[in-house]
Length: 184
Image 1: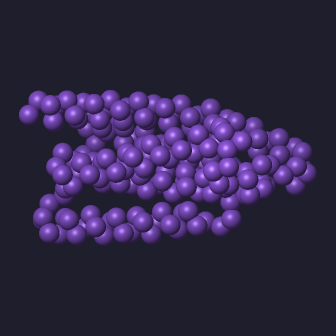
Image 2: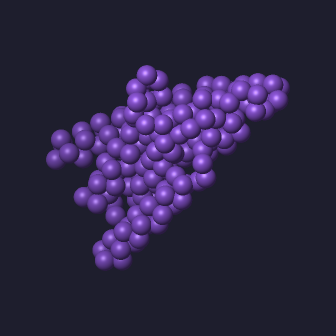
Image 3: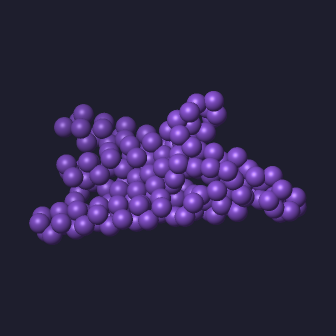
């Protein structure tokens, strides 16, 4: 089971720092940073890298139970932290414009973050060891079965949305490179 909400507080504090940096850029340039300019691109790249780390690293660790790369609970906290900070940075990258494919990608990002909060809530209802293994006998059999069923249902929704998000993001990145960089 997750111990406390450290990853949520760390994500919140990181968000405050990033917001301060973003506000300073807005203050000194007297405009919202455009997504296609240096600062906007940097936000998009950094946010996307965090989102990619969110998915890839946690999934690799989750599937390789024999690996000793730290506790699953620590990896889940990392997954939650980067899954909040990355999308927030990508949101700042949008320049508050939500048109076309970029807008659809942003919508998928918001949906996946909300879905992540729901999954975290369901996950924390099932008592677990520090390694992420379920503790048998800690809940009534009916409650544990229901929590497992909800978690399985959540996975069948969360994972395809995540895949659609990354497909959309890769198409967006390819289009941005093609139209904004290679055609100049």
